[in-house]
Structure formats: structure tokens, C-alpha cells
Image: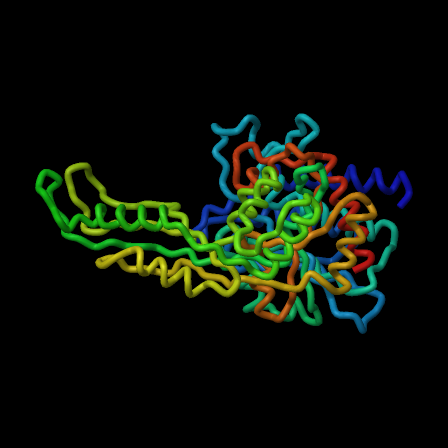
Length: 437
């Protein structure tokens, strides 16, 4: 890559990231979202350089965009490169800047979506626009997909596309998307690059407690709100046993090797202290989790409600879905029902093969001292839906980050922002990876 083309690529990824952030595409859940404006902008950016794309609208305003870039070797299987266009809400009163400004401050782009995941969307677009300008053709087909609704279970996005338009992914065997390839500086100053090879499963559930309605001034041993509160407290305070997946073991073995600390498979928690800001996120991958996130009850101060409900965000380690469900059932007690809001599988794929080798090589080209490692993501991605088609998915949206930058805290957080240096590093790595994948 010449100095001129590198500068153009880096300037473009910054500009596109700002543009995408400035187009609000908030997903409020319960089907309430609208990605159409940002989807149309993505199509415009592709069209400007001669790349044809198609919009798939699963419901009014819920838009997915697909473009297939033909490779030179038709015998090779295709690669799905995907991102999502929706973002979670942002309360402007809590932010230091307008959350949809895309403002550059302190050498960072600020705004909702800066790390989840309009930064990766911008890397994808900048890369293929560079290819179009230079005439570069990848070896294999690259199916570029921008999904709707990832932040609310992907009902109108990847799951709908897989169910209604599987032909889009014809011939594809592998996929790459968000939340992987970012650096974590461990004790001693070494940089690990966490490539996502596994992710926890999801079970969002609604608990409803039933009781006897009545006047607020009268004692009531069948108060639905009391029953619900006790159940929610038991769930929130439950200490889940540690369960180690293959990926978790591989990750911590590498951490132990690089830090000179002892690896004890019976208890990996001491190694968490070596991970700095990443410890909280990685710690969640050692066990199932169930966090109460929403409550609903009553309509007047002096009326005891006949029912009350809560939402629980349950996440399970690969192989331990039954443990999550059975434990929740045992904790809630009688007179409470469970309704599934959404559920999705856990994933785990090998940290080996040509695709992984290409990821590692691309990182080391830009950061020769980097150490690629596999890790489990505590959340989930659209790779879950693609797995229904037998497509193996990885998380690889590369970022080189400062040791004191608490990257994981910015997902769905206040003052979400991405460092310019990390973003430009990422687009260079992603481009090199795709040219050798």
C-alpha cells in the first residue's frame, strides 16, 4: 500500500464512521427501530464506487443491506463480512457530547455506535471502496451484509435474512464480524489481541408473579410484587459455579504463559487480575449469568397489583444451557411463571485454519509484538443466526488500544468513543486480512 493510498483509506474510515454515527438508527426493542436512513447511506457509499447492493426490508423501516463482491477463484467458498446498523438508545443529558454528533475530541470519534458497531461498518465500507477504486479483486467472494435489529435479538435482521433469504449466503462457509481482534494490555505490558472464537448463549425471559389484588392499606400475604421482588433478589444474588469451555482454557493458558503466572485449571480467577480493564468482561465468560434488567408492576400508590413482572437477561456458557434454565426455575419459587422473550445458541469454533492464520498474520504485520489469542465473548453476535446455515463465525474487528483505555465499558455506555489511531489501525488490518483470507 502506498503512502497516498494508506492516507486515503485512513481518512475515509474516519469520515465514514462519523457519517454513520450522525444518522441515528436507534433500536428501542419490541420491534421499535428504524435503520432505513443509515441503510440508504450505506447503499449510496457503495454505489458511488460502482458496487451494487440490495436492501431487504423485513418490516417498515427495518432494513438490511447486502452486496456480493465476486472473487477471482470461483472454486473457493465465500466469506460473509457482516455488521449491524442499529444502536442502543442514548440519553443526551448523560453525555459530554451530542451522542449523534460524531464529534472528534481528544483524538477520538464520539457518539453512539462508535464501538458498537459503526466503527466496524466504516472499516468494511472503506476497505471495499478502496478495492473498487484500485480495481483489486479478492480471491474468494466477499458477501458484505449490514444487518438490522442486532441489539434486540436480530428478529428483523440476521434471523429474518437466514429464514427468508438464505440464498444471499449461498456458497459461504465462514463469517467475520464484531467484538474481536482488539488489544488488551496485560501485566508486564504485553498486548494480547482477543479473537472471538466462542460466545455465550442467550435466554431473555420475563418472570410474572401472580397474587391477590387489593387495597394498599390492608395486609396481603399474596402480594405479587413481594413475591416477584424476592425471586428477583434470589436470582440477582445467586453465585453461579464456574464452568470452563475449551476456549476459556486456551485463553488463560496463554495469559499464564505471557505473564509468568501459574495456570490452575481448578481456579482460573487469579489470572483475571492480569487483564486490567478486560477482567470484568472475561470474568463473565467463566460462568452462566442472569441479571435482572427490567421491572413492571402496579398503577396506583394505594392499589396492590394482582401481578408483577421482571425481565432477566440470562447468558449461558457453551454446553450449559440446561443449567441456566433449571437454576432459574429453582430460584423463582411458586406462583411465578416464565415466558421466553428470545433465546439463541452458544457458539464455539476452533482457533485454527487458514482464516485464523490470516487474522493473526494481519495483526502481526501491523503490530509485530502483538499476541493473538482466542476468547469467549460474554454477549452475542449475528454469527448465531448464520450458524443455522452451517456458517462458522469469528469476531474480528481489529483495534489497537492504549493500555489505560477501558474499551469494554463503552459498549452501550455513556460517552461511547473510538480512538482515531485504533480505527485507522483496524482498517489497515482488516484490509490486509481480507486480501489474504
